Image (cartoon, rainbow, N blue to C red):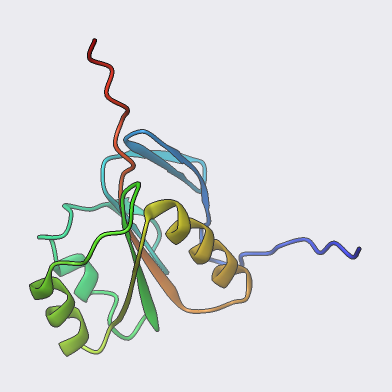
Length: 124
């Protein structure tokens, strides 16, 4: 088996995630987060379209992580992004993180908008 070291050039990979947080490039972000060629930043969630639209022309596809499970993107969000020319792929946040990292390692122009995996219900 041949192993190759992964190089991410200027992009910042997702290092990990857990209930309510993501670790990207060594920095922990609580709540929704957006990352791409300009680096990671907190994101306001699916109603916060301005930072997503700022990715137009910078990325070829945006991965939208919908939390622990895959869910449909709100129709208005999808329509707004696609009308602006930004392709959107919706998947569960863990799968979106993995896919983003793989495509970064290939030098692809990708963005990632993530909703956190919910904290487990601890009520007794």
